[in-house]
Structure formats: structure tokens, C-alpha cells
Length: 133
Image (cartoon, rainbow, N blue to C red):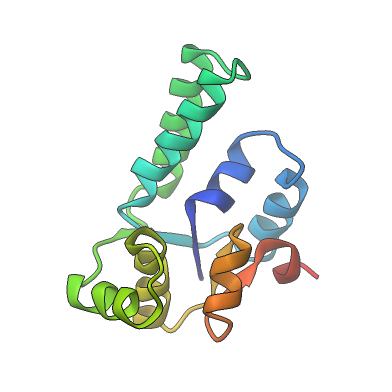
């Protein structure tokens, strides 16, 4: 089991240069969990693709529904105090700190597409490209 962020989930469902890595991550460990926040971040990513003209409404809805079905039952609430302690310590976004908090609470690695997050939290976060070697 691993914690994944919205970047990894997006790379799995939306064809990008990182999709092959996300597929390898899924093959290596198909048991993905995430904080509930992933849904909003994922929808924001879909919005970016729609606004840029890379995806239409129907495709975005289809992808969102598939991803949400896949993650159903694998979403966790995180404790606000734990998130805010990380924010206070690092100054990093509360959004990203939610993923780190979940990984730390579950004693699992966080696989991320965010290089800064992997640098800030090297004990828990690993880039998806590095996770699959």
C-alpha cells in the first residue's frame, strides 16, 4: 500500500509524459490511498486540461468518475493539527502537507509527482519516476 497524490493519480488517468511511470507505479503497488482532498485537486487538474483545450467536458467527467470509483474506500481524512504542524515547520502548502500527514500516519511512502515535495520530505516522499527505478 502507498499514498499517492493528485499528480500521480492524474498521470495515471490523463495521458502525459509521466503516464508510463504512473502505470509502473500501479503495477508495482496497486493499493493506492489518498486524503479526501485528492478529489478537489484532481478536478482542478482536469479543469486545466479543459481550459487549455486538451480535453472536453465529457472526457473530463468520464475520467473523474473512473478515478473516483477506483479510489472509493481508499480515501482518508487527516488530522488538521498534524497538517498545520507540517505547514508551520516547512511553510509548505497545506494541500501537500495533507498527503505527507497521511503517509506519516499510515507509515507508508508517499509517491508524488511534485519535485519540491519530494525534496522537502525525503523521509516519506518519493518521486514517481524514482519509485519505479
